[in-house]
Amino acid sequence: MQRALLQWYKTAKRELPWRQTTDPYKIWLSEVILQQTRVNQGLPYYERFIEKWPNVQTLAQADLQDVLKMWQGLGYYTRARNIHTTANWVFKTLDGKFPSTYNELIQLKGIGPYIAAAIASFSSNEACAVNDGNVSRVLSRLFEVKDAINSHLGKKNIQACADAFLNLKNPADHNQAIMELGALICLPKNPNCLQCPLQDFCLAFQHQSIDQYPKKNPKTKVQHKYFHYFVIYSKKELLIGKRSQQSIWQELFEFPLLSSDSESTVQVAFQTFSKQHGWESLALGIPIIDTKYRHILTHQILHIQFSLLEVKKLPLLENYQKIHRLDIHKYPVPRPIERFLEENLWLSQAGK
Ligand code: SF4
Image (cartoon, rainbow, N blue to C red; front, side, top):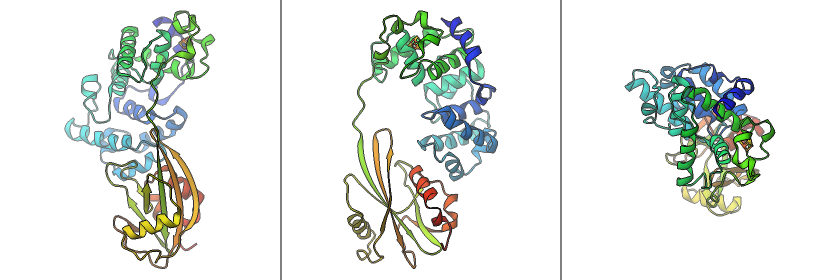
């Protein structure tokens, strides 16, 4: 099985920049970027990061706001904050030498068992079996793992399969190969079994039970949240604020916001928002209803309503600051706001 997998990998693998290096810093960056992100989408981000911050020293000295700005559009911003924290820690406490062994890596912020195993095996050929979503799917079908892959027992059993299957002579290529097989052949829907190098060994293929694997427990219920963004602007300026700690999009910038668990009209939302900030209700005027988006996160669906309010002079608003309209593109913002700005270019052109 190991030989068949490696032979297939040699001919079928994609040439990706992080496969041309054994530098643990670069491998770490690529793995963090590729979590929850497709290769095609992550590749330009990886290239931009490496060009701007080619080593851990330069990333550690970067401004967090610049890192978030560079990350903009990738989502799951905790990853960007973690890479900045970790780069700083490595720079200050490890003399800028990025670790390459599993035991050292697993202690770093934002690095779990999968990334630690990936960096350790790819950079120093340490015998650690990787186990991400792609690998779990392949192994659950190969060995017909009966436990749900999102349960504690299922994860343990899949890891045991991964460890047993690991090619101890060449863990780096073996790990890359099984991940690549999951990405290119053993797909979630309609796996290409006829092209699969492991077909002869695959229990799910032999029993024609592929569509039953991987087993999964039902997901937790999705919550709905309702966001009203009030884009309050004057001829030259507009209001934005930095999102507080412990929230989605932490440290990113956004327009004045009223969020709630239930739906309401723009008028009602703006009255509530005005009251919260001690204004006479609607003293500033009536916001004009603009774009509405739906933004889907892992356990939440955000219903986002943007409304525009042009004023002569911007009000003082706690937790929000006035900025020049031309400068809005310098600030890291969540994807829905980026989309709104792309569709309303006039807003970042002061005086239009
Ligand atoms: Fe996946 Fe099919 Fe290969 Fe089995 S034979 S590992 S189900 S692609």
